[in-house]
Length: 456
Image 1: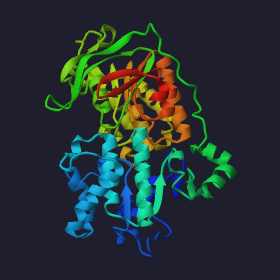
Image 2 (image 1 turned 180 degrees about the vertical axis):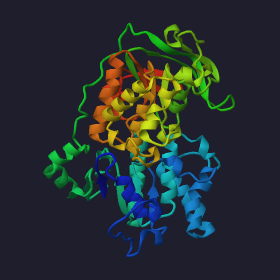
Image 3 (image 1 turned 60 degrees about the vertical axis):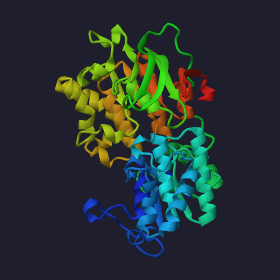
Image 4 (image 1 turned 90 degrees about the vertical axis):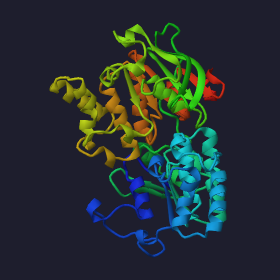
């Protein structure tokens, strides 16, 4: 079953309920009934395996092999059977790393594969996947989908998968259920029948249809006279000098241009983005800010103070929760504005504009951690845009977006670029690359190279 619906419709909440991890009465209210094999889901632990939207929330042990073994161990699987299951699951999802590799050293895409391997090793009767391929490169998407297909053939398990982009999973599903934004079902039936009969309703709700165009124009070439605001010169990146990920990187981020960084999972795209954003120091070479961007500061962004970064380079992390510090959505957007000591009226105006533009106004008083994955992503973008920095660094900015919120977010970013901002994004989203890839830089083992949008 493919479970669809607009951002915030409750898809992840339903999966949590099916897995028996939704929480008790102290965490919310429930009505009606839900059973798994005739019993309450929380009483049938082990029958359902859930891969969460945020893979960081699912890694429980420090080493890859131990993490995959954790589920079978808790289910009482005989010791002699556990490690063959671990290796089989890792092979199935294409995570080719040593069993003793620290989970903290995996990229976001590799952590997604790890989470899926941990669930497959349990061999559940109900497999619940919450956007399992959102941060994977195209080859990884196919590997994970095929791994799930093989697991279903072997186990005859039931699959419920949440995904905004439906084409990936159509070969594996025989039913589509669409949740409405205000509750209830918009559609339920065979995929071809649902997409044909309910096309208008689904488009209005923001559901991505298999053959739907992106809804925005393709990017044009970057301006030849664009002013470089950030330059990488012989750059080596890594978390520290003992763990260099890539070296010898050269490139520039220019005003009024959108640059997309593409490449395979685990190649170092996020590390490069954090280094360009001044949040990680180079382990070799340098990142240089132009005199216009530095505005009286030194040329090395990683030496700037946080308040100085706010008005120069804004970074949106791959995991939205890593940036949340406030108790409400409105307060989260206002954090940077208070740090800049802006007048209360200006803070209120900027917050109201972003809440409305990113469809977060009805959630202004909500706790950021209670939002859906797509809503969290839009909040993390809003919190960075509030300070209006001339350089924006975005890591997987369209994760979790339905078609309507995707179009609105892309148009917002394009408007900022057209107004002179420099945008650098890490993305596997092909539609995003076509819409905002004025330049596409592919990161691979040999360095950073200009790439055609179609190849990204």
